[in-house]
Amino acid sequence: MSTFTDLGLSAPVLKAIAALGFEHPTEIQQKAIPQLLSGDSDLVALAQTGTGKTAAFGLPLLERIAPESRTTQAIILAPTRELCLQITTEMQSYARYLKGVSIVAVYGGASIQEQARALKRGAQVVVATPGRIKDMISRGLADVSRVEYCVLDEADEMLNMGFYEDLTDILSHTPADKSTWLFSATMPDAVARIARDFMHHPSEVTVGGRNESTATVRHEYYVVGGRERYAALKRLADANPGLFSVIFCRTKRDAQKVAEKLIEDGYNAGALHGDLSQNQRDLVMGAFRKRQLQLLVATDVAARGIDVDDVTHVIHYQLPDETETYTHRSGRTGRAGKSGISLIILTRSERGRIRALERITGRPFEEKPLPSGMEICEIQLYHLADSIRNTEIHPEVKTFLPAVKDLLEGLDRDALIAKMVSVEFSRFAEFYARNEDPKGSTEGQRGETPLPHGGQARFFINVGERDGLDWMILKDMLKEATGLGKEDIFKVETKDSFSFFSTEADVAPLILESLKGAHLEGRAIKVELTDGPPPGKGGKKPWKKGGKKTYGKKGKPYSKGPGAKGKKRKKTTGKR
Ligand code: AMP
Image (tube, rainbow, N blue to C red; front, side, top):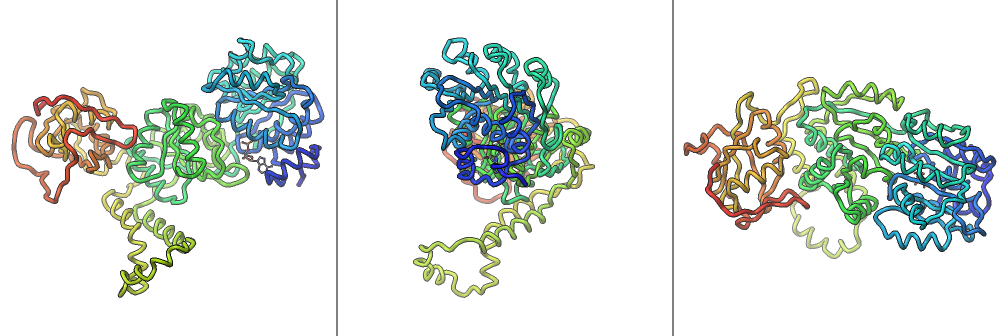
């Protein structure tokens, strides 16, 4: 196995690498570094994120620039602000023992004047997002006319994000005889075109094969009914207690909704998508990095450049439209030689896409049944026993032990253990006792409650005028919770402490699923299919089940987790 010294790096760089704890160069580093140190030829490198590609171009780049000159000698273009900052931080740590080297990040969403000042002080290496650097070049705030090295990182993502024009514009301001190093996880036509149009006879290095995903990632898929994605996600999360995962959704709205539902259901989850402000996104990413969040629910665009090691699972809540995006998503796990799992939730009609994914990744995909409630309970039980065994006893506990022992007086060891594990176990056992196990993928769509076929469905909901609702507020609340339109929910009737509404029968599963776990003023909302009373009439009350009900403050809006906004309107008649 080769060492970093074998690759021809200098003493200060080797010292920085040793300080970072890198012992051996990764495959891409072994292949790219000697070439980039010795020759001036252009390079196309096919490597996923997580393979050590930043050091593969960063280390030789630092060796080749002249620290005594303050002109910008190298520009690294990356698709997102996050990636841009990561590259900068990483390069700065490689340059720790190199005197006089300045690496500056330039990206949108931050003060352009401050970035311009940093460039003016002199930066040999500029790491930039295409939009911002193009802007700065055109305003005379950045000068790339004497650049000797240009790195295009995650070139496929930059092109996916529509940066082709910006890239060609930026490159047109750089000298024709510079060296260009292009790094990309995949080689779609657009990237090949960049290589053809802007590079001179590039040499090519590939790790893990063209368009292949890392060999350390295992791929599994679960076939579910269209409306069962969330229930399936919950099962997968419960069956993997140590999960540290990025969950990918296709739209911003789905990412937000899924994250909200997970939070309500007691998971440490957060959403990451383009509708959040930069500040909110930084907070979410910070919490994920610190492991305060276990589940990060993200869109593809927002998740680009997420560079968090030790992600155990990537979960595809929905498959991406572009097959190649799958490679990027699953590259978020199995990084730096660790193993990772990519789990796909898909419907029967999407099953055909698995073949294409197997082709593009060069890896087998395994179909698996969703874990049953009992399996999940068992996994959770062992996990709990394991955490108890591995928990360090806090020194302060001693102070309270005599009193605690008094409280538990009379319980023998077995009873004590059984009671302890039941604290957590009961939560899962009760949930899965209420929610039927999946009957297998061949059944197609399966509701957890018997559902009406054809015609209309009538629902009972345990909130009413006492909760500050009238038919309009309730309808708004239902629209917001389900994503249905105003025409889809009709015959809304509010009573004092409960209400009724109707929908077409085919959206009934959506109603039941969307409102599962919803709360109004801290009170769990219950929705049931009912056959009475018919709209506008009285009738018997099959829904009255007894049991004490507690109510929140009157007129307070419905809440579905952080970020959900309720609506409050003037009260109107109780029927529609
Ligand atoms: P990248 O593919 O550049 O995003 O790198 C993925 C992760 O691997 C980063 O956290 C790097 O710091 C780390 N890394 C890069 N090269 C090595 C190496 N030779 N040994 C161990 N870790 C590395």
